[in-house]
Length: 97
Image (tube, one colour):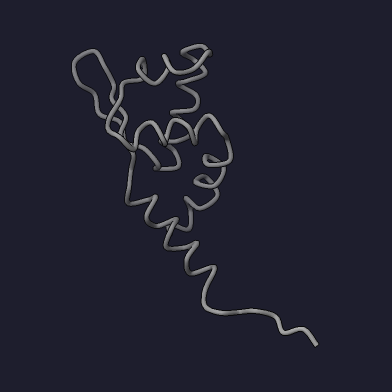
């Protein structure tokens, strides 16, 4: 996993709104407006959450005409899963005496 992005990634994942945005994006790209329509918050607040997800490299943005579309960065998600799997490791049970 990217050493510099480690803290940003977990900070981004710590917020339930951002996790919900990621879940929405797993089915495909969405515009900021489409994402915002699922929440009762201002456009500025949605932009803030998207900015944090972008900084953590959990999403990509692509500009098309007057819209910005966001897509899940599955490679970072796979890195997180791999790291968690390695953290879990093999059988490290503590023996009770």
